Amino acid sequence: MGTLMWISHAEQPLRENELCRALAIELGSRDFNTDNIPSIETLIGCCQGLITVDKKSSTVRLVHFTLKEYLSAHPDIFSSPHATIAEACLTYLNFQQVRALSDDPYVVLDCLEPFIYYCSLYWGDHAKRELSDYGRSLAMELLQEYDDHISAPCLTWDIECLDAEVENYSLRLSGLHCASLFGLVEIAAALIEMQGYGTSERYCFGDSPLAWAARNGHEEVVKMLLGREEVDPDESNNYGQTPLFYAVAWGNEEVVKLLLGREGVNPDYHDDNGRTPLSYAAETECAGVVKILLGREAVNPDCPDNGGRTPLSYAAENESAGVAKILLGWEAVNPDRPDNDGRTPLSYAASEGCEGVVEILSGGRK
Image (cartoon, helix red, strand yellow):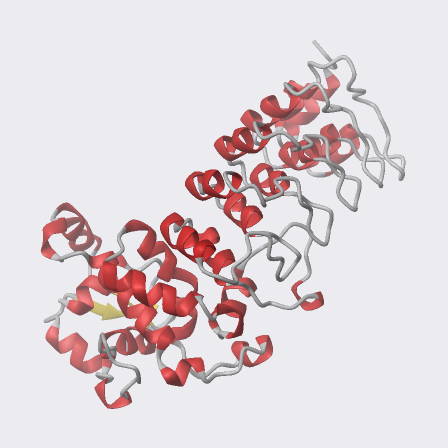
């Protein structure tokens, strides 16, 4: 039953060695007993043909999709599966053997403990769905010393940041950054109340916890952080990007509204490349976010960046026909404005084969 629970509720397919380690974890233990690790043959035998190993990927899966449908249709088969998985992941990360591992990112890549990546990347997703009191205490134990834990660079390495190169910066994170990224508002609030935890801590790429909450669209965490007097909602990172950039780039409309509703947030902020939030919204096809930004008087719909590229240019290159049409509805937008290399929005659309955008641009403002 443990095997079926993990396979049917895991955030991604588990490899053989990951699943076997997951089932070897003893809740309440401080050390990982490798003698508890079952063989994959044992698991296959216990499940009586209900699971199989994909030879190409070495992942373990249910033998047929109808079994997954059955398990999904009968949620009472497993008792609090996500809370149980969160507890197991957090127990694993709190093991003495894991805490003793180096947090050097290059060591992480060659790490011999295969279950570390899954626990680091997904414990928060399971906890977001369902978290027990015991799981909460395990999370607090992990996050209070998170910046020196191997889990931090694992998580950071997996995250795509705006125009950021991982190699140039430390991959360390605070526990508050982690809780904000996963959207764990109660844990984030508890960490803030602890002595020594600041809401404006800047790690990794110079991002604040607010920026990471905005990135993943966690409205409750954003509201909680914005409610703190010491939080600067317009604080920029090492690339000149504010939390609004993150909310915009990932299309989190409600978070965009929350940030723009806070006094002091500049909707037309320029990052180090001269790009504005509207520029990023235009290339990500976020029509709703584009409309919100254009509704702000301070926003210039035709503002060029350091390379001379306008929001329309980015929309054209990224097949954002709907956004291109919205931008062309503004008289201030020049559809033929060339960038520093002499390329127009139509040039970008044509080179990328964006027929819909080409048609819109060729038709001008009609």
